Length: 221
Image (cartoon, rainbow, N blue to C red):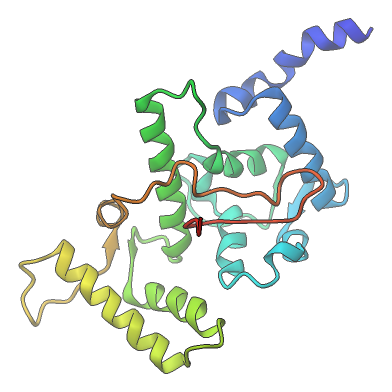
């Protein structure tokens, strides 16, 4: 009986393996973590993730959680948010954080990078209009800076404004003084982060069974 289960096991996960690039062992481990987070339920909610200790002091905790429930991160064209997600939807989101392996080709590595950039872009493009506006950018910068306790909200706002103007002048150098900068498009976003190695630096560790740590963004090492 055990041998029979072993033979059929790859077929059970084949579709998820094809869609996400995860191995059978990785899918099993993520399933265990999913059940831990959901309390052995078939779906997971924002409240389940909100209770993760590793996220408690993360200044963009809300944005990270919202991104997990963002329909755009299901590798489909649908927009909007889920109230709850099942394991396969959870797995699709986690595939954005899959690191390259020694067997990853340059083409596959570039595709992984684009996936990670798109995930980060969607996390900041909160109104789903295809651009990161000054207001959206300011909100994230203000949260990052003000929650550190070192900078007051008004100063954080000024820093966000200045940063957006710098982005505008870089991406639209011929912009007239009275021209309105609509925001960062995904193409601009790719240019801004062109020199940043994303393939291994953008990852989530709180999903490891038995651990409770998370990192999403630039590595400090």
